[in-house]
Length: 326
Ligand SMILES: NC(=O)c1ccc[n+]([C@@H]2O[C@H](COP(=O)([O-])OP(=O)(O)OC[C@H]3O[C@@H](n4cnc5c(N)ncnc54)[C@H](OP(=O)(O)O)[C@@H]3O)[C@@H](O)[C@H]2O)c1
Image 1 (cartoon, protein in one colour):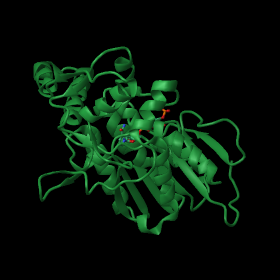
Image 2 (cartoon, helix red, strand yellow):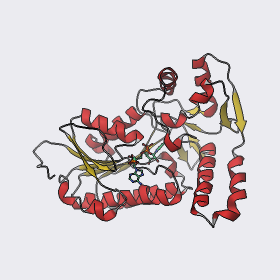
Image 3 (cartoon, helix red, strand yellow):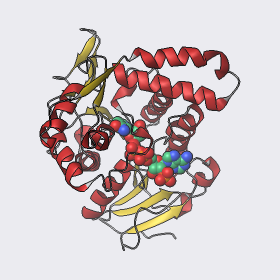
Image 4 (cartoon, helix red, strand yellow):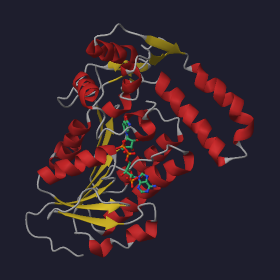
């Protein structure tokens, strides 16, 4: 499987190529003419002369370490890995463990760069997956390998969970007033462009890069307004107190210690509460608030166009997976 590295050839090792963002990144890399090796449980795509897949359990450190001889030296590594469940154990195995294995491999193949897809919410870590991500970010920063840590705000797909319900006449559910949290949503294509640009942008080296879509910031009520306007229907929302997550969590507390499954359910409730109460924007300690102005913008695709597309053609490749709630 060894591939001879020829002058001027650009080699990338991509983990997480089968995920929502990873698929966009893979496509973008192919368009840019990179030689891409994907690592994971399944292939990103079928045949392409510039593409090879190595079937490996990225959570198995020794299996990943054994790939040293199969990978081109000085390749850039891109990780779009993410826990699919957000459960406590899974978060540490994937967000931390699998990325750690990739980092060790990066050292042995003398990777020229490590581009990590992280998340803006890790700036205020309270959840297990956020601690796992932050711990890995710190290790990457300390590793000596040139890095770009990209922390995006919410993805379009994460704001698409209610489209079908609304289309079928149901109300758009908002937490509290619907004005408490905002984000600058970013499309998969725009984020993939941003991530791939990191490969050629020395000014993004050794930096933590929070990034949003083209803006402006939108809160939940405004998302509902966009959707109902596109449907030509009067706005219909249903308010849910964000405290509901805390109340249910408190009820489960006495039982959580007995079972990992229940402990994970409690973690999902914490995740729900976090997203119902925290904005996906830059947090400014000085003003003790989120600041849309300070949240960098990138890209051209708007949430409204995405909603319009989904209303007309369905979600197609925008599978929501376990992030549907958000
Ligand atoms: N949702 C948002 O709005 C948002 C916003 C900012 C940042 N983020 C972050 O962006 C990252 C990517 O998100 P995404 O939605 O693209 O993720 P996703 O669709 O869930 O894809 C995750 C990728 O990781 C792989 N993976 C997960 N668990 C694995 C395991 N146990 N063993 C091997 N591979 C595993 C998956 O491989 P398989 O296909 O084999 O399962 C897949 O390629 C995540 O870290 C997420 O926290 C998300």
